[in-house]
Image 1 (cartoon, helix red, strand yellow):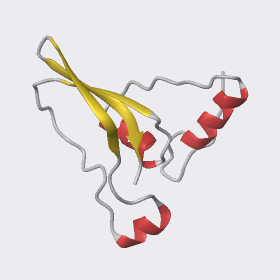
Image 2 (tube, helix red, strand yellow):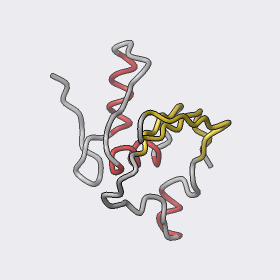
Image 3 (tube, helix red, strand yellow):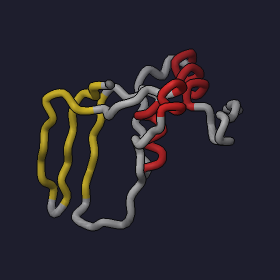
Image 4 (cartoon, helix red, strand yellow):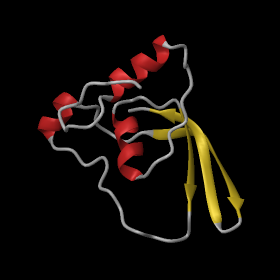
Length: 103
């Protein structure tokens, strides 16, 4: 079991998680989650490569990168993108992947 500190929102401190994994010689991590978890990793610039599966069903959304000026002082502002993104179809799903380009 790994015990980690909380961030200011009461969630797992992702920087502490990544440091702990690195020290245990885990230099690669696959994160599978919903919009909130993916957004947490992206906004903390903890993503090098992204594979995103998009189903043709809309079940909601998350306003992920809308920030006011005060938040820009604490967090990176702007939108991450993908370098040379690739697209493939798998059944009805679209799969988009590429190296993450941070603002």
